[in-house]
Image (cartoon, rainbow, N blue to C red; front, side, top):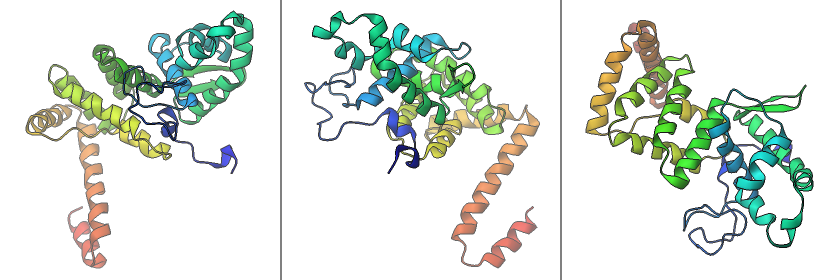
Length: 271
């Protein structure tokens, strides 16, 4: 099957090599997590992760070309390429290195465009990170280093505030309320697990990120309740959110109902 005919999903970011024990600290070959015992990623996954990490410092406002990210970031920061240009290949000059790696990098950039992590301007052949792309870059860095909570938290707020639907507003309020609690790390770890377990259904993954489900515990229920109370200040969003909840629950019960006629009659009475 040709590549274009396969489903492209976020699993390409964390795809691991087959036949390699994931917790073997000595099997680094071009793509292991920087943490001992981490997964052994495919070469493409290592490069993709490094591309997304570039968004952390580069941001989402500026534009870049494929040659720029090769020269200014990947050759010196991507584990695959720093290993490739070691030993005898260390003598290869920078222009020749860029010329050699750029076609592969450009193909991976186009995959990230398809996943809505990067925007492409075909007329001038340049790229721009999306807010979702930078969010995943920060999650990848967090997973490796466990140290950039503040920057990640700040961008999570930017990510949800940038969307204009009611659930995003609830997420934004909820994350603001959990920042000074232990729940923030639990929620970030949940986002990391979403990325680690992503499959080839890209729309499902995007939906899970955009409508993140809070961890359910006594403490989070109290914060979630407060978040709903604050959402009431935005009357239209509050009403839309609960109307969508109602439609969602009706859809579930409709699927389970054996007496569809009675269910429809009941739904009409309550509308």
